Image (cartoon, rainbow, N blue to C red; front, side, top):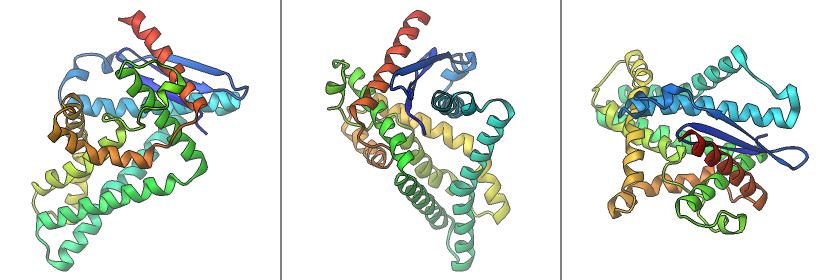
Length: 280
C-alpha cells in the first residue's frame, strides 16, 4: 500500500513516504534530460513525453513506497518492472479504448447509425467505463488511502501556489481538487476522442480498433495542451466553466486526507523545493 506522495518539479522529482516507524523518509531523483530539453517544451509532443514520464515516475514512487514498507522484498526493478508496466498499459488500452470502440461498431452496424452518433456512443461508453472503474476501485480500503494521499498532494500544491503558510492546519483548509490533475487529463482524452475519431468517418472493425491505438499519442498531446491552456487562463469565467467537470471528477480520485498525510505531502514539497533551488 502506498503511504507516500510524489511531486515533480522542473529538474527533479521527490517522493516522501511514511515508514513503518512513523518517520517520514524521502528520495529525490533527477529527471531524465529528455524530459527537460527542447522536446519537453514542444507543443503536442510534450504531452506524450509527459504521459510516459508520469508512468515511469509513478511506478518508481510506488516501488520506493513498497521498499520502505517491506524492505528489499518490496523492490521491483529491471525487466520485471517494465513488463508489469506494459501489461498494465495493455489492459488499460483494451478496457478504455478498444472495448468501447468494438461495442460502438457493433451498434453502428446493428442499428445503422451514422459515424457521429456512433462515435458519441463510443465516447459515452468510454466515460461510463472510466467512471465505473474509478468508483469501484475507490471503495477498496488501500486505494482509498492512495486517493487520500492524492488529496493531500493537491491541498499542499494549492496552498503553495496561493502563498499560504505551509503547515498541516493551514493546508487542510485548501481544496483537494487541482486544475492540472491527471484525472482531468483523462476526462479531456474522452471528450477529445469523440471529436477526433468522428473525423475519421466510418471504419470497419479492425481499422477502427487500430486507429484507436495509433491515435493515443495524438489524444495525449491534445489533452495535455488543453490542460495547460485552461490552467493558464483559469481566471477566465468561460475557462473556469470548462474545467468544472474535471474538478468534479476528482471527487472520485481524491479523498479528504488526515494531518499525517498532509505532513508527508509537505515533506515531499520541501525536498523538491530544496533540490530545485540547487538545480536552478
